[in-house]
Picture (tube, one colour):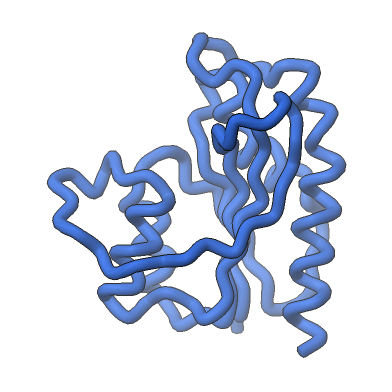
Length: 153
Protein backbone atom coordinates (compact mmCIF):
# COMPACT_ATOMS: atom_id res chain seq x y z
CA UNK A 1 0.00 0.00 0.00
CA UNK A 2 1.29 3.46 -0.93
CA UNK A 3 1.88 5.66 2.11
CA UNK A 4 3.90 8.45 0.49
CA UNK A 5 3.75 9.90 -3.01
CA UNK A 6 6.74 11.64 -4.59
CA UNK A 7 5.61 13.81 -7.51
CA UNK A 8 7.86 15.44 -10.07
CA UNK A 9 6.18 18.59 -11.34
CA UNK A 10 7.27 20.60 -14.36
CA UNK A 11 7.48 21.06 -18.10
CA UNK A 12 10.36 19.02 -19.57
CA UNK A 13 10.27 21.22 -22.70
CA UNK A 14 11.10 24.44 -20.81
CA UNK A 15 14.69 23.86 -19.69
CA UNK A 16 14.94 24.20 -15.88
CA UNK A 17 11.18 23.83 -15.43
CA UNK A 18 11.89 20.15 -16.04
CA UNK A 19 13.79 19.91 -12.74
CA UNK A 20 11.05 17.95 -10.93
CA UNK A 21 10.76 15.24 -13.57
CA UNK A 22 14.57 15.06 -13.87
CA UNK A 23 14.93 14.40 -10.14
CA UNK A 24 12.19 11.77 -9.89
CA UNK A 25 13.60 10.00 -12.96
CA UNK A 26 16.81 9.44 -10.99
CA UNK A 27 15.41 8.41 -7.61
CA UNK A 28 15.89 4.71 -8.27
CA UNK A 29 14.75 2.15 -5.73
CA UNK A 30 12.70 3.60 -2.89
CA UNK A 31 11.39 2.09 0.35
CA UNK A 32 8.20 0.05 0.41
CA UNK A 33 5.16 2.28 0.60
CA UNK A 34 6.61 5.03 -1.61
CA UNK A 35 5.36 5.63 -5.14
CA UNK A 36 6.82 8.06 -7.67
CA UNK A 37 4.92 9.86 -10.42
CA UNK A 38 5.66 12.57 -12.92
CA UNK A 39 2.64 14.85 -13.15
CA UNK A 40 3.82 17.33 -15.76
CA UNK A 41 2.42 20.84 -15.50
CA UNK A 42 -1.28 20.11 -15.34
CA UNK A 43 -2.88 20.26 -11.95
CA UNK A 44 -5.45 17.58 -12.71
CA UNK A 45 -2.90 14.75 -12.82
CA UNK A 46 -1.57 15.56 -9.35
CA UNK A 47 -5.04 16.11 -7.91
CA UNK A 48 -6.20 12.75 -9.30
CA UNK A 49 -3.20 11.03 -7.69
CA UNK A 50 -4.12 12.58 -4.33
CA UNK A 51 -7.77 11.60 -4.67
CA UNK A 52 -7.00 8.00 -5.69
CA UNK A 53 -6.12 6.71 -2.22
CA UNK A 54 -5.42 8.14 1.22
CA UNK A 55 -1.76 9.04 1.71
CA UNK A 56 0.33 9.86 4.76
CA UNK A 57 2.71 12.14 2.89
CA UNK A 58 3.42 13.98 -0.33
CA UNK A 59 6.82 15.18 -1.54
CA UNK A 60 6.62 17.55 -4.50
CA UNK A 61 9.76 18.20 -6.53
CA UNK A 62 9.62 21.35 -8.64
CA UNK A 63 11.54 24.30 -10.03
CA UNK A 64 10.44 27.33 -8.03
CA UNK A 65 11.43 30.97 -8.34
CA UNK A 66 12.24 32.11 -4.81
CA UNK A 67 14.65 34.88 -5.83
CA UNK A 68 17.67 32.79 -4.82
CA UNK A 69 20.87 32.05 -6.71
CA UNK A 70 20.15 29.64 -9.61
CA UNK A 71 20.66 26.05 -8.56
CA UNK A 72 19.80 26.71 -4.91
CA UNK A 73 17.87 23.75 -3.51
CA UNK A 74 15.45 24.15 -0.62
CA UNK A 75 13.01 22.13 1.44
CA UNK A 76 9.67 23.80 2.21
CA UNK A 77 6.72 22.79 4.34
CA UNK A 78 3.92 24.74 2.67
CA UNK A 79 1.14 26.45 4.55
CA UNK A 80 -1.86 25.19 2.58
CA UNK A 81 -5.12 27.14 2.77
CA UNK A 82 -8.62 26.30 1.53
CA UNK A 83 -9.06 26.62 -2.22
CA UNK A 84 -10.52 29.56 -4.01
CA UNK A 85 -12.31 29.05 -7.31
CA UNK A 86 -9.92 27.81 -10.00
CA UNK A 87 -11.36 28.36 -13.46
CA UNK A 88 -9.20 25.74 -15.20
CA UNK A 89 -7.71 23.01 -13.02
CA UNK A 90 -5.68 21.78 -15.99
CA UNK A 91 -3.49 24.86 -15.54
CA UNK A 92 -3.40 24.89 -11.75
CA UNK A 93 0.03 25.33 -10.19
CA UNK A 94 1.15 23.12 -7.27
CA UNK A 95 -0.04 25.65 -4.65
CA UNK A 96 -3.55 25.64 -6.09
CA UNK A 97 -3.59 21.86 -6.38
CA UNK A 98 -2.63 21.51 -2.72
CA UNK A 99 -5.41 23.94 -1.79
CA UNK A 100 -7.93 22.02 -3.88
CA UNK A 101 -6.79 18.73 -2.30
CA UNK A 102 -7.22 20.26 1.17
CA UNK A 103 -10.73 21.46 0.30
CA UNK A 104 -11.61 18.00 -1.02
CA UNK A 105 -10.22 16.18 2.02
CA UNK A 106 -7.41 14.53 0.02
CA UNK A 107 -4.36 16.43 1.27
CA UNK A 108 -1.98 14.17 3.21
CA UNK A 109 -1.07 15.29 6.73
CA UNK A 110 2.59 15.71 5.72
CA UNK A 111 3.58 17.73 2.68
CA UNK A 112 7.06 18.82 1.67
CA UNK A 113 8.33 20.61 -1.41
CA UNK A 114 11.86 20.06 -2.65
CA UNK A 115 12.45 23.04 -4.88
CA UNK A 116 15.24 24.45 -6.99
CA UNK A 117 15.79 28.00 -8.14
CA UNK A 118 15.79 27.88 -11.96
CA UNK A 119 18.24 29.72 -14.14
CA UNK A 120 16.15 29.48 -17.31
CA UNK A 121 12.61 28.11 -17.24
CA UNK A 122 11.28 30.20 -20.11
CA UNK A 123 13.21 29.13 -23.20
CA UNK A 124 12.30 25.98 -25.09
CA UNK A 125 14.70 23.10 -24.66
CA UNK A 126 14.83 19.68 -23.04
CA UNK A 127 18.16 20.12 -21.24
CA UNK A 128 18.50 21.64 -17.80
CA UNK A 129 21.05 24.41 -17.47
CA UNK A 130 24.37 23.13 -16.08
CA UNK A 131 23.76 25.01 -12.82
CA UNK A 132 20.41 23.32 -12.20
CA UNK A 133 21.69 19.97 -13.48
CA UNK A 134 24.31 20.06 -10.69
CA UNK A 135 21.53 20.64 -8.12
CA UNK A 136 19.90 17.26 -8.82
CA UNK A 137 22.18 15.48 -6.32
CA UNK A 138 21.23 17.83 -3.47
CA UNK A 139 17.52 17.45 -4.31
CA UNK A 140 17.91 13.67 -4.52
CA UNK A 141 19.39 13.69 -0.99
CA UNK A 142 16.60 15.92 0.39
CA UNK A 143 13.92 13.63 -1.05
CA UNK A 144 15.57 10.52 0.41
CA UNK A 145 16.21 12.19 3.80
CA UNK A 146 12.56 13.32 3.98
CA UNK A 147 11.30 9.84 3.11
CA UNK A 148 13.63 8.21 5.65
CA UNK A 149 12.43 10.59 8.37
CA UNK A 150 8.74 10.16 7.58
CA UNK A 151 8.85 6.38 7.25
CA UNK A 152 10.82 5.99 10.49
CA UNK A 153 7.98 7.60 12.45
